[in-house]
Image 1 (spheres, helix red, strand yellow):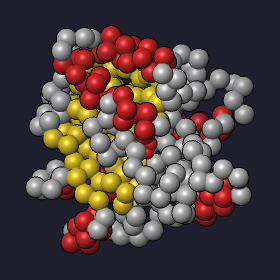
Image 2 (image 1 turned 90 degrees about the vertical axis):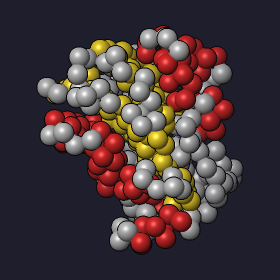
Image 3 (image 1 turned 135 degrees about the vertical axis):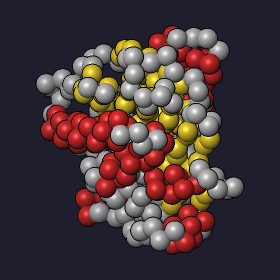
Length: 308
Ligand code: GLY
């Protein structure tokens, strides 16, 4: 998909992996997008290998998020955007479509890998946690607990502090995510985020909710962009319902896209269906992503040369 094209659809017989690096990348220039795409491709290759080995899609989706959370160029885990009080508050969610089971973490402060926790939460009675449960459970499970602050994000936050509209609706960068259709046709969606950056302290976006991430036996959808708009439009759950009720993935995505355009929304999503359909759709200018099947790369985001 070139930058001009806002919707892209395809169909695969077997395995499908789509990974995206966020609707508003930290470095929204050609070099930044190329760097993001290179990282996405590297991760996708590892993801495909694990799926071919037979590792369950929900486990592999969390591995995928962990790799994205490790890389400070993405707004997840280490290097996440900071809220207006200078604290990163991370959210993530996993939806196992086969089991129709959602788990999530909301506003975790000291978790470099909320994705490890969302996998563990699938098997617990309380499946969506916020603080203090997030850090308590992470310590109980001997998972890493430390700050996600980086120098680059802190400098960026300080720069924004000087602007008169503090606390602002500044759009720093955005959620990463993946959708998977494994070799058995089982679907999974997973997302991880540091929010939109410089938001009101304690603000919660879409990622820890079914508006940002939803999967069933019919479809899996992961959304990125302005959380309030995504929640108002119940994007992930709405697209899944449309597909479940008989629309093709393209019809469901295009209807949602037309509605989003009418409302001047700023978000995008990746989706797969049980029939092997896949799609990437956005109203934003940028959305680095890669689509892989079991043999390799099927499609990717190609920035226009004039982005600088
Ligand atoms: N999409 C992430 C957020 O709005 O928090």
